[in-house]
Length: 161
Image (cartoon, rainbow, N blue to C red; front, side, top):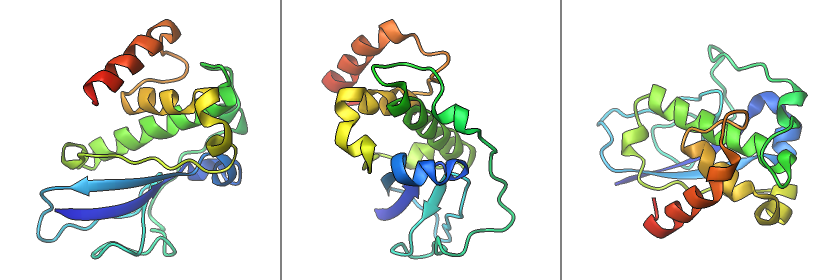
């Protein structure tokens, strides 16, 4: 088993994302190819602690980044605090989309999310963990059925998946 330490963040929302929506991911990959190399994506930046992975201080100049408005971060969404749910839900959904697009989603067995700034201080009370889980399930803040969230979170908790 190879451990990949990586940072998931919404680069296009700097400096807001850096201060409030930075998510650290620790991925466990069970079957890496012998020449496995993870490159820098718009929301997935490997750290220098991993072998065969480029340093995050040298971003790939060929990577295109999504242009996102500040209104995307602070738009109306699921609550109780949409400012603590919209960005994290979108970041988690983008992470899953990119992991799928780059072909390593099936190799991920565990995802660890560390919250920083105001998300760490008020996240549970403001619904951040649930929003992240919904994003990891592929939900969007605009389309998620808010009434189904509590039962879905309870199902995730009971089944641990």
